Image (cartoon, one colour):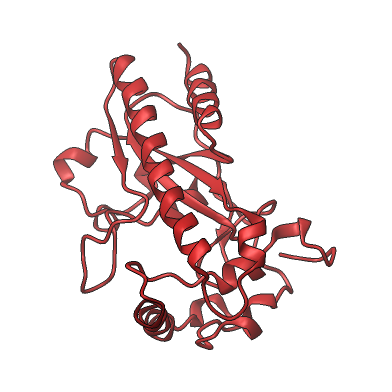
Length: 231
């Protein structure tokens, strides 16, 4: 099959299993230190497939100033689904005679820096699925930040997408709702420490096993927001 055929086959498979967004990034645009995998493995892989799942709008709308138990369960189940999609895409690629490495949707491997094997949001940005918003999350034109992501690294020949050049424009919705005051007008001023401390507080007081919030995720609706404005 051609590179275009390979992309369409993987895109259709992702959509069949519930994927809402699909893009391909050039792995060579990333520095090796940005991906916590053995260089010997990365040297054999050229592409990053980025897949996004659209979170339930109805569940997010119930969030006020803290995450709800329903959102917590939803978050967990979507991570499991995304990992399943990653395994299915990996299996299909291997059946075609190529290599694939599914990266867990939510797994910390460096606790000091709170990093996973790679940044799904930066891979998604490179795959043309959106940009890094003021809330330090991926923002997509259609879904805003109401998405979760998974990545599959592969040597299957694919057509890559161009990184997004969009941004949040004049939208400041997420600044006023952030319970930690971590979001600033300039994305580069985002206060990671304040955000992380708030996540830990929520996990402790609400008895959640994961650090989640969802307040700024709810605020970032994309251009389909009810106000007619948006990112």
